[in-house]
Image 1: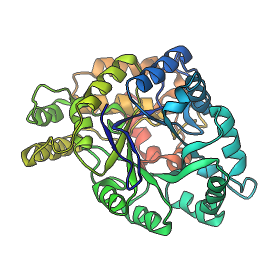
Image 2 (image 1 turned 180 degrees about the vertical axis):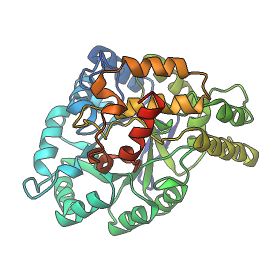
Image 3 (image 1 turned 45 degrees about the horizontal axis):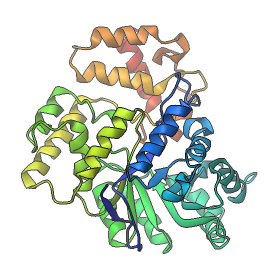
Length: 381
Protein backbone atom coordinates (compact mmCIF):
# COMPACT_ATOMS: atom_id res chain seq x y z
CA UNK A 1 0.00 0.00 0.00
CA UNK A 2 1.37 3.40 -0.99
CA UNK A 3 1.58 6.03 1.75
CA UNK A 4 1.51 9.82 1.42
CA UNK A 5 2.44 12.75 3.72
CA UNK A 6 -0.29 14.02 6.02
CA UNK A 7 0.25 17.67 5.17
CA UNK A 8 3.27 19.11 6.96
CA UNK A 9 3.00 16.61 9.81
CA UNK A 10 5.71 14.08 10.57
CA UNK A 11 3.72 11.00 9.61
CA UNK A 12 2.12 9.49 6.54
CA UNK A 13 -1.24 7.88 5.82
CA UNK A 14 -2.28 5.25 3.30
CA UNK A 15 -3.26 6.58 -0.12
CA UNK A 16 -6.65 4.89 0.32
CA UNK A 17 -8.74 5.57 3.39
CA UNK A 18 -11.87 3.71 4.44
CA UNK A 19 -14.97 5.92 4.55
CA UNK A 20 -17.70 4.45 6.74
CA UNK A 21 -20.63 6.44 5.32
CA UNK A 22 -21.69 3.75 2.82
CA UNK A 23 -21.27 0.47 4.69
CA UNK A 24 -23.04 -2.67 3.40
CA UNK A 25 -26.69 -2.91 4.43
CA UNK A 26 -29.09 -5.79 5.05
CA UNK A 27 -32.13 -3.74 3.97
CA UNK A 28 -33.06 -0.27 2.74
CA UNK A 29 -32.87 1.01 6.31
CA UNK A 30 -29.60 2.96 6.59
CA UNK A 31 -29.22 1.91 10.23
CA UNK A 32 -29.52 -1.78 9.31
CA UNK A 33 -25.82 -2.37 8.64
CA UNK A 34 -24.69 -5.83 7.60
CA UNK A 35 -22.41 -5.93 10.62
CA UNK A 36 -20.45 -9.12 9.92
CA UNK A 37 -19.71 -8.06 6.35
CA UNK A 38 -18.85 -4.48 7.33
CA UNK A 39 -16.45 -5.69 10.02
CA UNK A 40 -14.82 -8.12 7.59
CA UNK A 41 -14.33 -5.31 5.09
CA UNK A 42 -12.81 -2.87 7.57
CA UNK A 43 -10.45 -5.48 8.97
CA UNK A 44 -9.48 -6.71 5.51
CA UNK A 45 -8.68 -3.12 4.51
CA UNK A 46 -6.47 -2.69 7.58
CA UNK A 47 -4.74 -6.01 6.92
CA UNK A 48 -4.04 -4.74 3.38
CA UNK A 49 -2.41 -1.56 4.68
CA UNK A 50 -5.24 0.96 4.99
CA UNK A 51 -4.51 2.96 8.13
CA UNK A 52 -7.07 5.79 8.00
CA UNK A 53 -10.72 5.17 8.99
CA UNK A 54 -13.31 7.94 8.70
CA UNK A 55 -16.76 7.99 10.26
CA UNK A 56 -19.15 10.55 11.77
CA UNK A 57 -21.90 11.05 14.35
CA UNK A 58 -24.89 10.80 11.92
CA UNK A 59 -23.68 8.12 9.50
CA UNK A 60 -26.14 5.22 9.22
CA UNK A 61 -28.48 6.83 11.71
CA UNK A 62 -25.73 6.95 14.33
CA UNK A 63 -24.77 3.29 13.93
CA UNK A 64 -21.54 3.78 11.98
CA UNK A 65 -19.33 4.82 14.90
CA UNK A 66 -20.41 1.84 16.99
CA UNK A 67 -19.79 -0.52 14.10
CA UNK A 68 -16.32 0.94 13.58
CA UNK A 69 -15.62 0.52 17.27
CA UNK A 70 -16.55 -3.14 17.04
CA UNK A 71 -14.35 -3.63 13.96
CA UNK A 72 -11.38 -2.05 15.76
CA UNK A 73 -11.34 -4.59 18.58
CA UNK A 74 -8.78 -7.39 18.77
CA UNK A 75 -5.86 -5.05 18.13
CA UNK A 76 -7.10 -3.49 14.89
CA UNK A 77 -7.56 -0.11 16.56
CA UNK A 78 -3.84 0.10 17.22
CA UNK A 79 -3.08 -0.13 13.50
CA UNK A 80 -5.22 2.69 12.20
CA UNK A 81 -5.84 6.42 12.67
CA UNK A 82 -9.50 7.09 13.40
CA UNK A 83 -11.31 10.25 12.33
CA UNK A 84 -14.81 11.24 13.32
CA UNK A 85 -16.78 14.47 13.35
CA UNK A 86 -18.66 16.79 15.68
CA UNK A 87 -22.29 17.28 14.50
CA UNK A 88 -21.83 21.04 14.33
CA UNK A 89 -25.49 21.67 13.46
CA UNK A 90 -26.60 20.21 16.82
CA UNK A 91 -24.67 22.83 18.80
CA UNK A 92 -26.92 25.60 20.11
CA UNK A 93 -28.11 27.37 23.22
CA UNK A 94 -29.49 24.12 24.64
CA UNK A 95 -26.37 22.13 23.61
CA UNK A 96 -23.45 24.58 23.68
CA UNK A 97 -20.71 22.12 24.65
CA UNK A 98 -18.58 19.76 22.59
CA UNK A 99 -17.80 17.44 25.50
CA UNK A 100 -21.11 15.50 25.66
CA UNK A 101 -20.91 14.63 21.96
CA UNK A 102 -17.21 13.81 22.07
CA UNK A 103 -17.57 11.62 25.15
CA UNK A 104 -20.39 9.64 23.56
CA UNK A 105 -18.35 9.21 20.39
CA UNK A 106 -15.40 7.92 22.37
CA UNK A 107 -17.73 5.41 24.01
CA UNK A 108 -19.21 4.35 20.66
CA UNK A 109 -15.75 3.85 19.20
CA UNK A 110 -14.41 2.13 22.31
CA UNK A 111 -11.39 4.44 22.43
CA UNK A 112 -9.84 6.84 24.91
CA UNK A 113 -8.89 9.30 22.17
CA UNK A 114 -9.76 10.15 18.55
CA UNK A 115 -6.83 10.76 16.24
CA UNK A 116 -8.49 13.37 14.01
CA UNK A 117 -11.62 15.22 15.15
CA UNK A 118 -13.44 17.32 12.57
CA UNK A 119 -16.03 20.05 12.65
CA UNK A 120 -18.54 18.45 10.31
CA UNK A 121 -19.82 19.85 7.00
CA UNK A 122 -18.84 23.48 7.48
CA UNK A 123 -20.97 25.90 5.50
CA UNK A 124 -21.68 29.53 6.43
CA UNK A 125 -24.38 28.73 9.06
CA UNK A 126 -22.25 26.05 10.71
CA UNK A 127 -19.15 28.27 10.67
CA UNK A 128 -21.21 30.93 12.44
CA UNK A 129 -22.12 28.32 15.06
CA UNK A 130 -18.41 27.47 15.38
CA UNK A 131 -17.58 31.09 16.10
CA UNK A 132 -20.57 31.83 18.31
CA UNK A 133 -19.96 28.91 20.66
CA UNK A 134 -16.15 29.05 20.49
CA UNK A 135 -15.96 25.46 19.30
CA UNK A 136 -12.31 25.64 18.30
CA UNK A 137 -11.39 26.68 21.85
CA UNK A 138 -13.39 23.75 23.18
CA UNK A 139 -11.57 21.41 20.79
CA UNK A 140 -8.23 22.78 21.97
CA UNK A 141 -9.26 21.96 25.55
CA UNK A 142 -10.15 18.43 24.44
CA UNK A 143 -6.79 18.08 22.77
CA UNK A 144 -5.00 19.26 25.91
CA UNK A 145 -6.97 16.63 27.83
CA UNK A 146 -5.73 13.94 25.46
CA UNK A 147 -9.16 13.15 24.00
CA UNK A 148 -8.27 14.17 20.45
CA UNK A 149 -5.03 14.30 18.53
CA UNK A 150 -5.62 16.69 15.62
CA UNK A 151 -8.24 19.37 14.96
CA UNK A 152 -9.70 19.51 11.45
CA UNK A 153 -12.84 20.31 9.49
CA UNK A 154 -14.88 18.93 6.61
CA UNK A 155 -16.28 21.41 4.16
CA UNK A 156 -19.31 21.96 1.91
CA UNK A 157 -19.33 25.71 1.30
CA UNK A 158 -17.83 27.98 -1.35
CA UNK A 159 -14.20 28.88 -2.01
CA UNK A 160 -14.16 32.30 -0.26
CA UNK A 161 -15.54 30.71 2.92
CA UNK A 162 -12.99 27.90 2.66
CA UNK A 163 -10.13 30.38 2.58
CA UNK A 164 -11.67 32.30 5.47
CA UNK A 165 -11.86 29.17 7.60
CA UNK A 166 -8.31 28.05 6.75
CA UNK A 167 -6.98 31.49 7.71
CA UNK A 168 -9.05 31.76 10.90
CA UNK A 169 -7.06 29.19 12.91
CA UNK A 170 -3.40 28.26 12.75
CA UNK A 171 -3.95 24.91 14.43
CA UNK A 172 -5.84 23.15 11.65
CA UNK A 173 -4.21 19.82 10.85
CA UNK A 174 -6.42 18.90 7.92
CA UNK A 175 -9.28 19.92 5.65
CA UNK A 176 -11.62 17.32 4.18
CA UNK A 177 -13.15 18.39 0.87
CA UNK A 178 -15.40 17.02 -1.84
CA UNK A 179 -13.12 16.69 -4.86
CA UNK A 180 -12.95 14.66 -8.07
CA UNK A 181 -12.31 15.23 -11.76
CA UNK A 182 -15.89 16.50 -12.18
CA UNK A 183 -15.72 18.91 -9.21
CA UNK A 184 -12.60 20.99 -9.78
CA UNK A 185 -14.58 24.23 -9.40
CA UNK A 186 -17.30 22.97 -7.04
CA UNK A 187 -17.13 24.01 -3.36
CA UNK A 188 -13.45 24.31 -2.36
CA UNK A 189 -12.30 22.73 -5.63
CA UNK A 190 -8.76 22.64 -6.95
CA UNK A 191 -8.07 26.19 -5.76
CA UNK A 192 -9.03 25.20 -2.22
CA UNK A 193 -6.88 22.08 -2.34
CA UNK A 194 -3.87 24.11 -3.40
CA UNK A 195 -4.58 26.86 -0.85
CA UNK A 196 -4.80 24.42 2.06
CA UNK A 197 -1.76 22.44 0.95
CA UNK A 198 0.30 25.63 0.66
CA UNK A 199 -0.59 26.38 4.29
CA UNK A 200 0.70 22.96 5.37
CA UNK A 201 -2.71 21.38 5.91
CA UNK A 202 -3.32 17.79 4.94
CA UNK A 203 -6.17 17.44 2.46
CA UNK A 204 -8.43 14.40 2.70
CA UNK A 205 -10.74 13.84 -0.26
CA UNK A 206 -14.34 12.69 0.07
CA UNK A 207 -16.73 11.84 -2.77
CA UNK A 208 -13.92 10.75 -5.12
CA UNK A 209 -16.54 8.96 -7.25
CA UNK A 210 -19.28 11.58 -6.80
CA UNK A 211 -21.61 9.22 -4.99
CA UNK A 212 -21.09 6.58 -7.67
CA UNK A 213 -21.89 8.85 -10.63
CA UNK A 214 -18.32 8.48 -11.94
CA UNK A 215 -18.44 4.66 -11.82
CA UNK A 216 -20.87 4.12 -14.72
CA UNK A 217 -21.22 7.49 -16.43
CA UNK A 218 -23.24 8.22 -19.59
CA UNK A 219 -21.83 7.33 -23.04
CA UNK A 220 -20.67 10.88 -23.78
CA UNK A 221 -18.54 10.84 -20.62
CA UNK A 222 -17.18 7.36 -21.29
CA UNK A 223 -16.07 8.47 -24.75
CA UNK A 224 -13.93 11.23 -23.24
CA UNK A 225 -12.51 8.94 -20.54
CA UNK A 226 -11.59 6.31 -23.14
CA UNK A 227 -9.05 8.74 -24.61
CA UNK A 228 -7.10 8.70 -21.34
CA UNK A 229 -4.22 6.24 -21.01
CA UNK A 230 -4.69 3.37 -20.37
CA UNK A 231 -7.76 3.36 -22.58
CA UNK A 232 -9.16 0.11 -21.15
CA UNK A 233 -8.96 1.16 -17.48
CA UNK A 234 -12.36 1.34 -15.80
CA UNK A 235 -13.71 4.77 -14.80
CA UNK A 236 -13.16 3.92 -11.11
CA UNK A 237 -9.43 3.58 -11.63
CA UNK A 238 -9.17 6.76 -13.64
CA UNK A 239 -11.07 8.74 -10.99
CA UNK A 240 -8.87 7.46 -8.16
CA UNK A 241 -5.58 7.84 -10.03
CA UNK A 242 -6.58 11.37 -11.07
CA UNK A 243 -6.63 12.24 -7.36
CA UNK A 244 -3.44 10.43 -6.44
CA UNK A 245 -1.75 12.21 -9.34
CA UNK A 246 -1.94 15.41 -7.25
CA UNK A 247 0.68 15.78 -4.50
CA UNK A 248 -1.58 17.92 -2.27
CA UNK A 249 -3.94 14.99 -1.67
CA UNK A 250 -3.08 13.02 1.49
CA UNK A 251 -5.65 10.25 1.31
CA UNK A 252 -8.79 9.42 -0.64
CA UNK A 253 -11.87 8.22 1.24
CA UNK A 254 -13.83 5.69 -0.74
CA UNK A 255 -17.24 4.69 0.58
CA UNK A 256 -17.07 0.99 -0.24
CA UNK A 257 -20.18 -1.15 0.18
CA UNK A 258 -18.95 -4.52 -1.10
CA UNK A 259 -15.82 -6.62 -0.80
CA UNK A 260 -15.40 -6.45 -4.59
CA UNK A 261 -15.30 -2.65 -4.45
CA UNK A 262 -12.75 -2.82 -1.66
CA UNK A 263 -10.50 -5.22 -3.56
CA UNK A 264 -10.62 -3.11 -6.71
CA UNK A 265 -9.77 0.07 -4.80
CA UNK A 266 -6.94 -1.66 -2.95
CA UNK A 267 -5.45 -2.76 -6.26
CA UNK A 268 -5.53 0.82 -7.52
CA UNK A 269 -4.05 2.16 -4.28
CA UNK A 270 -1.10 -0.21 -4.53
CA UNK A 271 -0.31 1.23 -7.97
CA UNK A 272 -0.91 4.88 -7.04
CA UNK A 273 1.69 7.52 -7.80
CA UNK A 274 1.96 11.20 -8.65
CA UNK A 275 2.64 12.26 -12.21
CA UNK A 276 0.77 9.51 -14.04
CA UNK A 277 -1.29 11.86 -16.27
CA UNK A 278 0.03 14.35 -18.82
CA UNK A 279 -1.50 17.52 -20.24
CA UNK A 280 -3.41 15.68 -22.95
CA UNK A 281 -4.98 13.37 -20.37
CA UNK A 282 -6.00 16.37 -18.27
CA UNK A 283 -7.72 17.86 -21.31
CA UNK A 284 -9.70 14.64 -21.71
CA UNK A 285 -10.71 14.75 -18.04
CA UNK A 286 -11.94 18.31 -18.58
CA UNK A 287 -13.95 17.18 -21.60
CA UNK A 288 -15.45 14.38 -19.53
CA UNK A 289 -16.39 16.85 -16.79
CA UNK A 290 -18.16 19.10 -19.30
CA UNK A 291 -19.99 16.11 -20.74
CA UNK A 292 -21.10 15.03 -17.26
CA UNK A 293 -22.50 18.47 -16.45
CA UNK A 294 -24.43 18.41 -19.69
CA UNK A 295 -25.73 14.87 -19.13
CA UNK A 296 -26.98 14.96 -15.53
CA UNK A 297 -29.62 17.55 -14.60
CA UNK A 298 -29.15 17.13 -10.82
CA UNK A 299 -25.75 17.08 -9.06
CA UNK A 300 -26.81 14.74 -6.25
CA UNK A 301 -24.14 12.58 -4.56
CA UNK A 302 -26.67 10.44 -2.62
CA UNK A 303 -25.08 11.48 0.68
CA UNK A 304 -28.59 11.38 2.28
CA UNK A 305 -28.00 14.51 4.38
CA UNK A 306 -31.37 15.73 3.05
CA UNK A 307 -33.15 12.88 4.86
CA UNK A 308 -35.43 12.25 6.61
CA UNK A 309 -38.03 14.15 4.61
CA UNK A 310 -41.11 15.09 6.72
CA UNK A 311 -43.32 13.55 4.01
CA UNK A 312 -41.11 10.47 3.61
CA UNK A 313 -39.89 11.34 0.09
CA UNK A 314 -36.77 9.37 -0.86
CA UNK A 315 -34.99 12.36 -2.37
CA UNK A 316 -31.72 10.67 -3.47
CA UNK A 317 -33.55 7.76 -5.11
CA UNK A 318 -35.81 10.10 -7.09
CA UNK A 319 -32.82 12.08 -8.31
CA UNK A 320 -30.93 8.89 -9.21
CA UNK A 321 -33.78 7.63 -11.38
CA UNK A 322 -34.32 11.05 -12.93
CA UNK A 323 -30.62 11.51 -13.76
CA UNK A 324 -30.46 8.10 -15.40
CA UNK A 325 -33.63 8.76 -17.36
CA UNK A 326 -32.20 12.00 -18.78
CA UNK A 327 -28.54 11.04 -19.16
CA UNK A 328 -29.03 7.76 -20.98
CA UNK A 329 -31.27 9.29 -23.64
CA UNK A 330 -34.29 7.07 -23.19
CA UNK A 331 -32.47 3.75 -23.23
CA UNK A 332 -33.31 3.16 -19.56
CA UNK A 333 -36.77 4.73 -19.59
CA UNK A 334 -38.60 1.46 -19.09
CA UNK A 335 -36.33 0.35 -16.25
CA UNK A 336 -36.45 3.71 -14.48
CA UNK A 337 -40.21 4.06 -14.95
CA UNK A 338 -40.74 0.64 -13.37
CA UNK A 339 -38.40 1.44 -10.50
CA UNK A 340 -40.28 4.68 -9.84
CA UNK A 341 -43.67 2.93 -9.89
CA UNK A 342 -42.38 0.34 -7.40
CA UNK A 343 -41.57 3.02 -4.85
CA UNK A 344 -44.06 3.60 -2.04
CA UNK A 345 -46.35 6.55 -2.78
CA UNK A 346 -44.90 8.62 0.06
CA UNK A 347 -41.37 8.06 -1.31
CA UNK A 348 -42.13 9.42 -4.78
CA UNK A 349 -41.33 12.92 -5.98
CA UNK A 350 -45.06 13.50 -6.36
CA UNK A 351 -45.39 13.44 -2.54
CA UNK A 352 -43.11 16.48 -2.15
CA UNK A 353 -44.94 19.51 -0.68
CA UNK A 354 -42.05 21.94 -1.33
CA UNK A 355 -41.51 22.66 2.38
CA UNK A 356 -37.81 23.32 1.76
CA UNK A 357 -36.51 21.66 4.95
CA UNK A 358 -34.16 19.45 2.92
CA UNK A 359 -32.52 22.33 1.08
CA UNK A 360 -30.93 23.73 4.23
CA UNK A 361 -29.18 20.39 4.78
CA UNK A 362 -28.02 19.71 1.20
CA UNK A 363 -24.22 20.03 0.85
CA UNK A 364 -24.62 20.54 -2.90
CA UNK A 365 -27.10 23.45 -2.48
CA UNK A 366 -29.58 21.70 -4.79
CA UNK A 367 -32.94 23.48 -5.19
CA UNK A 368 -34.77 20.31 -4.25
CA UNK A 369 -38.23 21.84 -3.84
CA UNK A 370 -38.02 23.32 -7.33
CA UNK A 371 -36.74 20.17 -9.03
CA UNK A 372 -39.03 17.58 -7.39
CA UNK A 373 -42.13 18.61 -9.39
CA UNK A 374 -40.06 18.23 -12.59
CA UNK A 375 -39.06 14.73 -11.48
CA UNK A 376 -42.68 13.82 -10.76
CA UNK A 377 -43.80 15.14 -14.15
CA UNK A 378 -41.12 13.16 -15.97
CA UNK A 379 -42.48 9.96 -14.43
CA UNK A 380 -46.09 10.77 -15.21
CA UNK A 381 -47.20 13.14 -12.48
